[in-house]
Image (tube, helix red, strand yellow):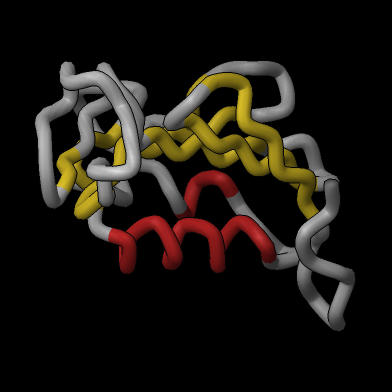
Length: 114
């Protein structure tokens, strides 16, 4: 399912949900933005904790994010891990905005969540 259309300098992406609480946006250039807010992810909720059963009470207040290159390797968002936990919605939207650009350079995201 393609969620955005090509407009000037943006790249289209496909949205998939490999499992409950995990959404992945695969861009036409092969990069993937992975956003986790489900059980076991480094995320927080308005109600519940990361190991509770999921349900309608789980309203995310932060997210776990990862960026994968077309070859499947991680773009390091922090110096200590391949994924960045407990990121705000603003941070997720900023990463998405950078990845949508035709001139996206993955180096722009290295250590972005430090």
